[in-house]
Amino acid sequence: MVSYLQSGSELSRISYASLVDEVIVSTSSLCIDDGEITASEIAMHVGEWAQSFLPEGSFAVRARNLGQGVCNLSRREIEAEIGARISGESRPVDLDNPDFQIAVVLAGQG
Image (cartoon, rainbow, N blue to C red; front, top):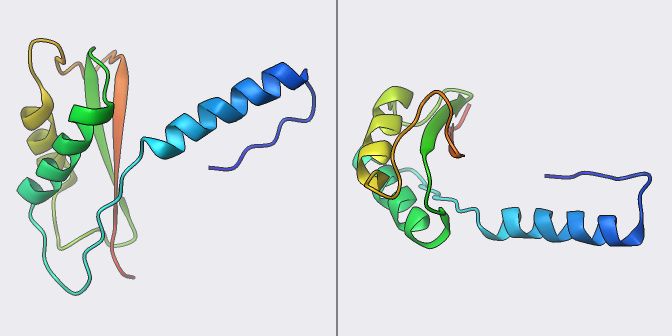
């Protein structure tokens, strides 16, 4: 993520930089070389991330394929697996108006 602010006070630019830093620090990636991965393994990884970084509140999972995707995995299957693993009383799934969205990008080799 790269963004440039042309105007604004020093304080607003520092505040914005802090927000960008929080977003970058709280992201995670899972790289698999020449192997296969299951939707359950992806859900487990995202679930561990959510325990540390996802605040309480409703959420939705949005998966996207970049290129051919990964190992012929279904985006909907991954969204459902992750949602089932994370959801609970303090983190309900809300597909229409969530407090938070979890973005999962499935980037396979082209």
